[in-house]
Length: 441
Image (cartoon, one colour):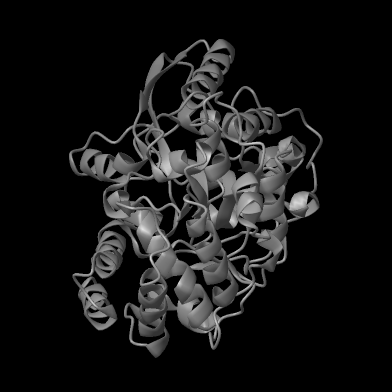
């Protein structure tokens, strides 16, 4: 999410607002006091007693489990009193299972953090540790402005691992075969023209994992980003309504585009990331030319190719302009993966988060997952051309917005996503889908 020189000043979030990239930076390029990267917990103070912690992550695929296992092994080697048990949860199941665990009093000590309204809900429920005073000074300096992604009311609740701008990830080979130039796709008219050419080549033009709901909803988010003004879309969390006409306009734009049948056959029952038949798998195996997705797509596709390597011809371009839209047409949508500690976790949990935030681990995770690290000193590990293109687009974004479902929180966000699926399934027109969304508040 080449922005490489300023990888950690671009996407920042303010409290539970949708706004990213509007809170400034705290000199992310600085290396702080010059102390060695923390391997013994940094600013946190360990108890010295034997402790066992539970870690939940969503790192599936070929490389995901191994990178977490190595990180845990390295940390345990440096902390003889610590044992960390790892549980892998499929991405699409993660939020629901975490919510259930929190409700049942079995919150894992260390867990994936989505941020936004979901973090806000967890803080209100007294489930997340405030780690502000426990962060190692060097890690704090190197991550810089990206701490705002995990900050509420000036308190930090998670260590960010990666930045994830969204746009179209495409196969350069399939585009070339169909006579499509990605650079020519600048508005909805040119996107539709590209779709027509790609469909004529007997491949699916755009893959969509509608079964998981959120990938379908991201189409609405992108149209809303173009149709709604900065003030409206950044003020959604505070407004708690979709009253502005731009929201209906966004749904209508999506409905109009969907009528051109740009998506793969059976997209409503297609999974997003699981297996070769998923929407990501279709791009990985040259069955679809492109997919709208966040920057994790590079690593996900790489794990679904026959040789388990990144797609060599993968490219990136931002969501096109929408004529008449009130939003800045260069604005981006993005998120970040981070890790939090349960409020009941031992102080060694904060030690582990400092360990994850340091350069060595951020580099390792960046290489393993093909992601843009939140720590600016690890940005040199971003070598994939498509990922660099996404980073460059994010650097040029006048403002950047968090995923709408993440910003609104678990229950409201899921209801919004379901309304978009109903629209694409033909069971609701734009007005009915909007009414369904309004009820979510």
